[in-house]
Length: 512
Figure (spheres, rainbow, N blue to C red):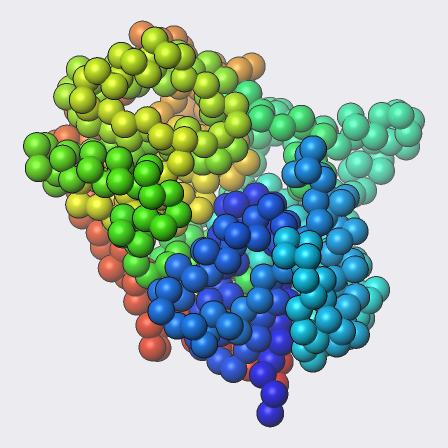
């Protein structure tokens, strides 16, 4: 019997792409499978390297089972979805006809394989889904859910017996009332911060405006479009592949999604954590040799001079950066005053660190600033004690798999919900005084309209002093033990007999 052929098409956001790289590696290790991984050609090399890492670098035979196809993109605007989608249509049409498929990254065509037995699309890839349905109507389409279930249920719902198209109907009703020229306003209405009370499954109720603790980094109508796409993909897919785990999710969130998919005879497969099994600074050296040497030297020195679990790793991911950076400089001042060493990664395009700040930090010997950082390797290093993060789900997963507790500075999207849940799990602190923007000083629902953060630099300083005071005491020690327990349990999910491994096997067997 020939190998199964599965196609994967990724979203451009790296937090969505990386889990699919790990999933591809694990599927070929689990069964006789060939995978065609379609991604923007500017990410072709990064995706190829990530897949090799997930395979452990040494298995050339398995690596040969995954072929990465670069899709053409708009060089002036790499996030231009229309150009990538046009290229996807052409590539998938070739795959569906068992024809050679062109790669825009290498300018070569990859050999023909049997038509895909299934297509995995990102939760925001509804246009890809529509095209695939038209080109290969009988091909099952599986949705990749890279966020937590509690967040997805809250952001992209409602999900129920009559919920298909509910968000779209809200847009259509708004347009019918206000006129076609108000389409942008209608999309913003989906993602606008309001006093509406949300009930995330398994989490405390919250006002909708609490999802916007910082100024939005994208225009609200763009967020509305993403919500529409995610809702449509979740409703229309043939199966849902979650990057999360039942060890992390509130049981109520798991039950809510399982009940929703059961209404139409579909299944959800919990395949997380989709994080490579190992990560060391040595593994990452080939990616950025000069930077890696500097990071490795700094961390080894911190370990020798300050001891294990003494370093704070700070990163807000590849897209976001504080709109009021003085709040970040204040946090760093607190760390310096406590003689706490730290690494600050700043890969976001909007990140700017004035020379006065960088010079001051470099002179202390306690700080390392870098535009690129091997996050998993840093989290796995024995010097690392805490992760100050925007609380995106990819970062959360990597921290928990390394057993590192977190300090959350959420910006938006799923992060405020993740931060809330992590605090509930006993593995994180959530900062409030660092909030910025129009919603910053509004009360949280859980506070009953009582105390609200002042969101001043003095408030930031006092809060962060308090957090690190607790982090260095019994409270922080408890969080570290709790994070270690989760790490140990998560490591068992992809071993023989583990829940995620068994779910992946069941998923592949559904194609036979």
